[in-house]
Amino acid sequence: MRLRLALFLLSLPALAQAAAEPPLSSLTLVGPPSIVFKAGRDACDGADVPDASARAFRDATGAVALFGMHYRNRALRGPDLDHLKLDCTVVLDSGEKADPALYDDRSWITATWTEDGARIAALVHHEYQANEHPGRCTAETYEACWYNTITAAASADGGRSFLRTTPPAVAMAAPFRQEVGQGRHRGFFNPSNVFADGRFRYVFVSTTGWDRPGDQEAGVCLFRTATPGDAASWRAWTGTGFTASFPDPYRTKGARAEACKPVAPFPTPVGAVVRHRGTGAFVALFMAKAGDGFAQSGFYWTSSRDLLTWDVPRLLVAGATLYDDPCAAPGGLIAYPSLLDPRAEGRNFDDVGDTAILTYVTLRTEGCTITSDRDLLRRPVAIKVWP
Image (tube, rainbow, N blue to C red):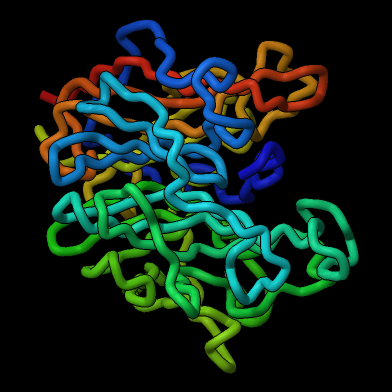
């Protein structure tokens, strides 16, 4: 997260597992963007900037809660996706604590799942920013000191508040502890939304990889569980099965993780995955910069029948992203795409029909600096299928 998330560009073989025929024929823009949230107009305080892909669910009353803000976590709420307003109540704060074993430095709610609208399971992108804590990192720079973990939090009141457990509930962690001289950002990052297929719930999670222990390749890994409220139950695809687990290295002695197998063609974190109701095909959105198989920078989409083999990505929105040089983007950047259907049949908005809403964030630049002047936008799209 933060403004320098652009440094998190993953080096994956481009388009390595493309399918011959895409399940869907097109995903196209069919209208202009409109503003959902404007930081300078709608914020409760300086912590209110869109800083993650939008995640939404319907609570037990049918009202909508949408997350995707900063590390003082608040929700946009309303009767439906078309009428959202920021609720100033902080549902999960960040303690900015110096002990990495507490997993309470800076936390973003980045994925949610609920079966009944009352009990909500959340996956949390947790950054231990060691450069902010004296003596915890020799490099003293953000990227070189960044140790990331996916933790869990839970709500019993429909998302009005989230609690962490003691000890912390860790869903995906590197099999080593934060190191004073680590030299680069490491761990697991930026979950997609949680989505269903049969009895399992799935999520894509990115990793920068590591050498021993475990020799993990950088990429985007697919995890699944039958019990999303149990952080320890998530297992990653290894190439042969969903068997890899990544427990808390501070409380699991001698942890040596089985590596997860990155899923192509994703070069960066997956913004969202939804299932098309008419065909059963999955659609994924992500952002990419020009090069390595991508002709232009922007938002791309791809589709799949089995979540492991995806077709050739196609451009949806062109524009400089967080992975581009802000010095060369005087018009600003785009980031954090997601796809939501106001008429979704599921409580967690993980299905779409033939129309949906693209949500994303615009970030204004000043010279070479990415500012906190950001808007959360929505734009209608149409989905067409093969005859």
